[in-house]
Picture (spheres, helix red, strand yellow):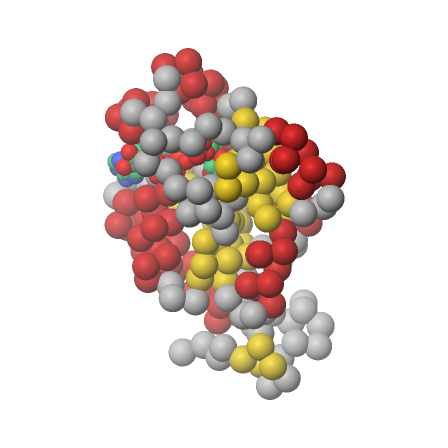
Length: 206
Ligand SMILES: Nc1ncnc2c1ncn2[C@@H]1O[C@H](COP(=O)(O)OP(=O)(O)OP(=O)(O)O)[C@@H](O)[C@H]1O
Ligand SMILES: Nc1nc2c(ncn2[C@@H]2O[C@H](COP(=O)(O)O)[C@@H](O)[C@H]2O)c(=O)[nH]1
């Protein structure tokens, strides 16, 4: 059992970043992992992408106009942001920082450019790259999901080629062949990082 508190108060939570190409299964793996990590919460992103039929405002995303997004960016309210496949996506900074300070682990499910920004700005963050078993499997998953037009799928696959070349930048890599196994690997990482002694955070006792 890991301690939830240091002697002087609450130990801040870990910022966990799950990244990887579109369609690799980040959403599915993250749902299974969240159900097994009661001290981990999911950050809900802001996006300018049109809402899909099943998506709910404030649950899946905060859907905003480009103008509203630009204002959030300019005000420094986004912890990271990126343009991806024709839309903007970003992580609300204050919500994440409040949860971390309260001792919760916060999970960001984001694309690779944003993950690289977190790598630079939050050296303590735990970055996990989710890979497909093959490029063909990735293509098949995007088509089978049926949420994007063939043009958008082609764009996402072109982006995926670049993103897969950058997987070595991240601390962990999980191959999502079997979704249950991939989720358990993520859970193990979250638990191991929670128990890890973090001497680099000066003044904090674990
Ligand atoms: N291990 C797996 N084997 C087969 N299909 C999978 C596996 N993991 C996920 N899938 C399927 O692949 C599709 C894409 O998964 P998901 O939407 O979770 O991907 P994602 O990485 O979150 O995509 P995006 O980045 O575009 O949001 C879904 O239909 C999902 O059910
Ligand atoms: N850099 C960020 N990427 C994000 C964020 N929220 C989601 N995403 C990623 O965008 C793509 C496309 O998502 P989709 O919902 O349109 O399929 C995917 O890889 C998401 O993980 C964010 O806040 N910042």
